[in-house]
Length: 402
Image 1: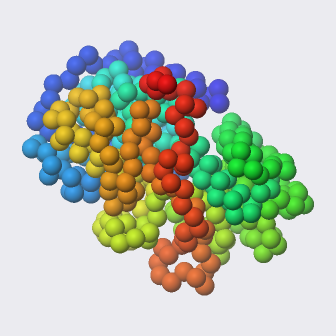
Image 2: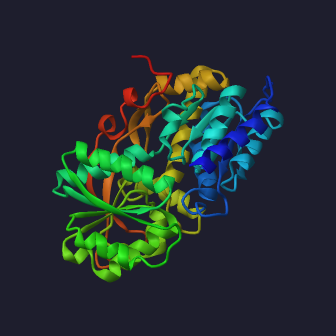
């Protein structure tokens, strides 16, 4: 965590010393997609977020009397790189808003830069709850999910369905411990109990001893408080152990459809996780996702990419309604207007900048149940928007008045 904060502080120090004081309009709206374009998160966000943003312009750019342009760049998962790109965009390239930011350190740095430059920041890929908590900004909206909502939906739905005893398999650094602690608290609030945890080193390849401890706990739910390759390796080895067939439920606390695709249904079958979006939910999500797939060599969109579309769509609606590109005024209008699109349905943007919508618990299908490409998920339950996200009073955002 200290390295995380140091990276943010360093990026802000560089960026704040060079921020512009004002920016003249250039007769167009320019939106920058700032994402990991080639690294660990490029499948779930990356170039697909830029494609999603362009689809939003196709659908909603016609609301405006001026052209809308999408530009994109790779933040490389480095706060200083992301901060430098955002500063350059705002200062010299007339970028009016940034969307994406699928890295928490980058998102926090760019959020503060946007506030000082009076630009809109649409964090469609960031997970950290700080963006709508103590580090909230009047210029930032957090769109898709956050760590609290993911943990809340999973714990609430699974405890109510009888999964009332939990054991955590946690990666041993700040991220894993934070996810474990957040989820443990919510499990207890939902009426469940936590039987224990085991911590594994980052990047370990052998989960045998950790999975044996999880099995021997007798917990009904084994929760994976890790991500990326750690989570994939743990899931594969859990499948080899036959954990799902022995009455214990495996839960992924942060997972996207791209990770399911990479794992394959043989390894991922039965895994449960939370998401506000699935491409095959209804006619609206299917129609849009096929448009997306046409530009992505058949790949279906993740929740983060859907969030980029939805955030840009609402941003363009707000510009049309406010008749200005002023960052804070447009974000205020985004909070005033209800949200509604074919991917997330109806929702709203709260005073703390948190966009809320229904969240869903999904279960990964078996190979036998999957009938066509990317047919990976079954809907288990839905948590209504007002119950899915952290109450504003608990976040500590200074924009919220009681």
